[in-house]
Image (cartoon, rainbow, N blue to C red):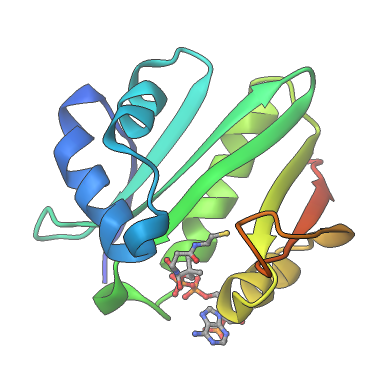
Length: 149
Ligand SMILES: CC(C)(COP(=O)(O)OP(=O)(O)OC[C@H]1O[C@@H](n2cnc3c(N)ncnc32)[C@H](O)[C@@H]1OP(=O)(O)O)[C@@H](O)C(=O)NCCC(=O)NCCS
């Protein structure tokens, strides 16, 4: 399977927002937030595209004060467990490092086992527990990773 990792642009708004809803349901970022991600000059938004031109998923992050912040990571359900999430995160890290950040930070819901496993595999370490971060009894872990190439 050939996968291209391409920088997303404003024209991808509807498709990325639909993927965000598919992945996060009622927790999805609002359309306006995705729109901002696509036009903010400091944001990096990478989409994974297959040979048929379908967007399989995307990742978004921003480099600020030498720290890269992961905003979202979405892989459409039918393209999961193919290494797309890992590929997107690695590309996001590379680009954020190139923008001057040598550390990545993210929050992940404590019960999101697949994402936790993916981040651990990529070398992220849990630094603290954020109680009720996503709502009542929905804790999150803050995870960090030092970048070096
Ligand atoms: C989390 C998510 C991005 C993973 O994407 P993916 O493309 O399926 O992940 P990958 O195929 O790159 O998986 C890499 C590794 O992560 C771990 N992993 C991913 N999904 C897993 C699952 N369902 N169960 C167990 N481990 C899993 C495995 O270690 C996997 O390696 P392996 O397949 O060689 O065992 C995807 O499930 C998703 O979009 N979920 C909904 C949105 C979300 O929760 N995003 C993260 C928010 S912080």
